[in-house]
Length: 317
Image (cartoon, rainbow, N blue to C red; front, side, top):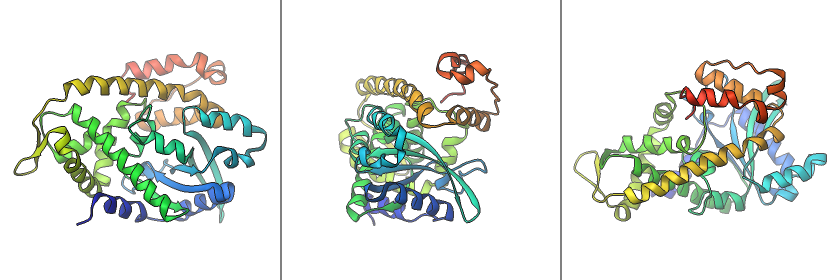
């Protein structure tokens, strides 16, 4: 039986390698050169079961340092360098052509030092470890050391989501119930617009992986958190976690605030960021939002009424 590191390694390296993914990896290698350490594939496109016709891949592009990584961005290099230092990661949208086909993706540029921080117990919010607490894949790595380090970051992310999920479960719970709650944590610490069925879809798509790794994580944290496994499929907490729950709820609120602070960055680094958000609302909820010319030009000043409306109607996770 594999240990958790073995399970994670196998999951990272065993996935469907498509022409689309290879095209983006080649682009990142050419753009960042020797500064490129890892390309992490995450999000709904990792599994065929969660990928939709309108979906496109999401990546974390991990580099040694921002200064060298941004050399080819020319007149925007200084701006992007400053933005990379604030509330990582820095998001870009990319369109490339290969063999007569057009591909789109979203990629998050981040340094390895920032990735290590934001997947550790010192993370100031859960923006990154919430996303890496789900199944991810590794289409590119510069060395085996980088694979080993990513296994640690991924393990930390899975575990931190798991530890937070315990605070929102009854004293007696099933493994699948625990997994679904852990998968939902990133939505509690962020403003996300997703289908109501998203958590169930994520679970069904990768349930064999989640059952293996999260059962091992429960074994890891069992003694510390007072968890015992009864006969059958049930786990039970033998101690209360109420005092810790207050701290977790404050952390989730802080994470949500910081997710909003990232929006101006997105507008600066992504030319069609507003259109991306509007299309996501329409895809996930069937709500078409029409912006006035003034709202489109200055969304952070005049666009808030739409945010509060969909929030009030319960469409924001």
